Length: 117
Image (cartoon, rainbow, N blue to C red):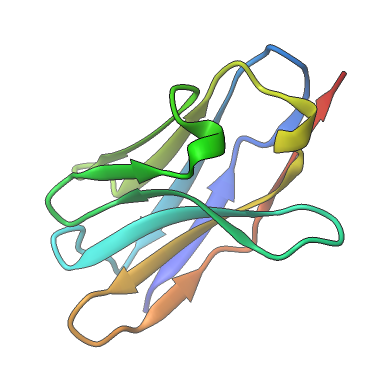
């Protein structure tokens, strides 16, 4: 059974940093693409960062140079390091995993990030 559990959200001032963590179970990273999404109030869910099975990373333009997605295969963890945070980064952040061969799609419960100006 696949489970994703996010943590690390909170309230931070603009310019600050947070590291989000996604604890996974039932996932083999060589079979899954892992992503972080976010959803701000009144807006659609937005793809923020991706790490492929081979470890290649991609980011939405608005976070390039500020956010870093990474994974620790031994600990079954995925991270999103967020630096130079802006008020517009305020959202609920979700960890997502897609099994490439079957397109089975799994979500965590989300963690709130609030950036004050």
